[in-house]
Length: 93
Image 1 (cartoon, rainbow, N blue to C red):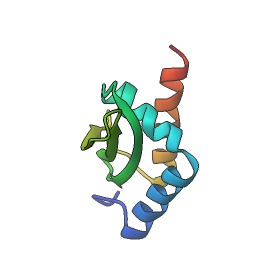
Image 2 (cartoon, one colour):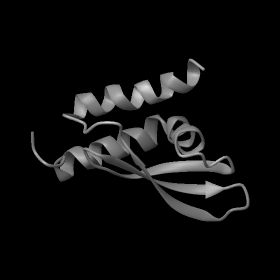
Image 3 (cartoon, rainbow, N blue to C red):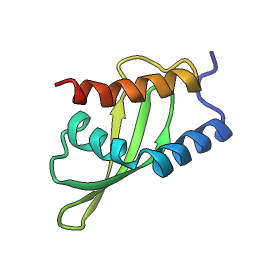
């Protein structure tokens, strides 16, 4: 396993999440990072160990927030499964 995703893999994952799963990014900010006042969130980075979000608050201010995965991601497919599971964890509560 490489230490990190390639630049192309990162770009594809970030584009996919922001274009198709913006609601999930907001959920990550609110639930997994505890930012209750988040109004919107976009993924700005992903590594095997972290995900970085640009979060816009209800008052319009913005902050960068980083989530540390429970375990290192092993592949792009593993990232997809892990990110989907994070959404499912909230839906299942």
